[in-house]
Image (tube, rainbow, N blue to C red; front, side, top):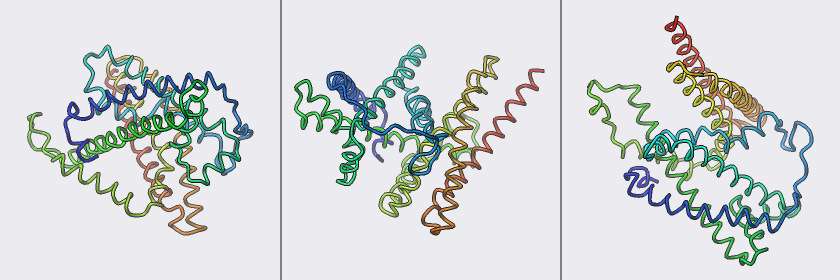
Length: 330
């Protein structure tokens, strides 16, 4: 991750992702054909009511869980941090961005079917045997492909390879984006004295990457429980980031005297949804702290509190900016 996030994009990221795209296309085509040939039935029990077995409510957690393929804050960072810098023309934005999200939606459906066709007893046995989500997906789609002659073991190895390749791209891309954000935060706290734009960036990228890698290493080699606790907040934080991406887009459209409402309306929906999720995470973390100690829910409660503070501050900042633009128009 350190090397991939500091090397030039053309040296590793572009050629590797270009090769990985073929793995993705083959995986999606084989998986789609496998589902058509196998025609698996959905064995997972139907969900009835507004509360799951784990005690979480249908609203908002269903939406923050499955919405990543439709609107994602992480994808917004990728689009602004790396993808946009690799486009030859602005005309390519729509097919690349919208087409990519449609493809991810199709992949999400394949992932859902690869698990939903298992009965609860079989799924419990696989979980008890240590099967990871990646293994469940690979074995499920491989069993579908066996219907038209591809050996199950061969297909399972191929799907596992394709998934692992894309997990690697996500991890090192996240490291690169974290480096960008860290550098921008440092620059915002201590802006450079020079007025020449060519001399404004003086932060050593190797030093900033080391800071990001060190934080991840602490989670990886330190307290694994803490890392798992923080991971439960990813969906809510991701959708909240997507809401503020829409806020930024809406403010930009308003500054150009274009229809900012086209971004503000979905922004409000996603902000309310993700905000409800974060509040419930905070309340649940506080209750666990009170019942079992800080180690049980302290990380989630603290992280949710930080997200709420950031959410409120960004919302106030966005509202202030919008009001200022309205006053200037008058």
